[in-house]
Image 1 (tube, rainbow, N blue to C red):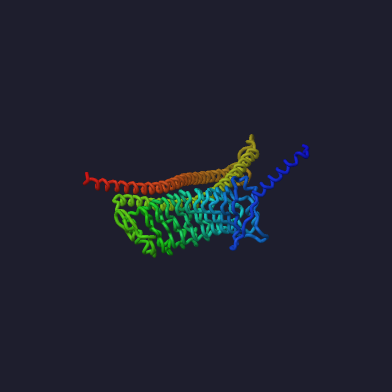
Image 2 (image 1 turned 90 degrees about the vertical axis):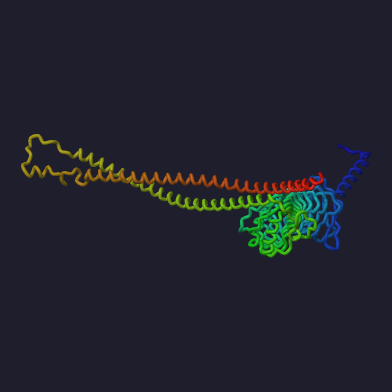
Length: 494
């Protein structure tokens, strides 16, 4: 392609447009007196556009704190962590992020009021992050958050979490504060073993969720817990049997604004007071429909006793089932030991059978050789010689050493030895059959144990579902109770 003089203005316009485009994708931050370098007006509408954004510091010094203000970014600029090698703190408030990548060197991340639904990090390195604030985002799944083992503060309030297993925090040995408030949590459980502890956690926020039931046994792995916030849920009762032993430092346990039954609330408050808890509420309620306990509203719902009794029965049944499972596990271990012993005995029996078979074969070969030798050495019958007289004849007729074929082996003794060996073979064969029957019984027991394990898992799931159904039933009973009260109130007017 050839350009003429007339094309020069067009080329100049294209160059100027290119320079303007490059200048629009290049941003320089403003360094404040507190060491925070602030970017303003950054626009990133797609992940592809994030690759073209260039970030620069105003001087030659290293920047450790960066903030994005008045910006609109779909994702973080791709070169952010490359441009700032010493970056330790990042603030991205209200910049419309949909996902965020956390560098392994970052220590503090504040990304509240965004649209973040996914979190990524470098999988081959444990992140050094100590404080993570992701309040007011759109998180539904936080399974990969377990990678951040050095976290001390984790705030996930006002997201969209529905169910939660506390095992995702099992590797965070330094975690002090965990905020899960204002989500849509309806179920909180823990599959952490009792031996795994989070020794530093002191504050847990579960307020403003949709919890109707909570087993405080899920908190057994937080021995240093001092504050628990359960206000503004739909709790009717909680299981608290393990509370004093598991949470000896508990001082604040907020319970207000729930659907407590008065009987359950009285028992719970008394239990908490024995455990050293001093604070149960943020404020005292003044207008309760039925009554209040320690300034916390509750209701006198008669069907609650039946529901609570059924829940206790299910819990007792689950305890018995777990005990039965442990007993079967011990039986299985004993059976495995017996099987090992029987296997060793079976191997010894097989070896003995093999040796015995070799000996029988040797004796059979020797007997065959003796019989063949006897047939070859037998003299022909005498034709004309008269038999010796008297004692000589009788002496020659006696079976003796000179009359034995071969001169060393007795066929009768060999036959007796063979018969004895056959009896021993039959006995060993019987023992082997007994061992095989015991092995089949072990296989049957193993199948029954596997079936019981499956039934145990299904029973646990059924128990959890029944607890949730009980909680829903309590709510429906309360609504029905309120409707009856309204009908009785309107009856005199009619």
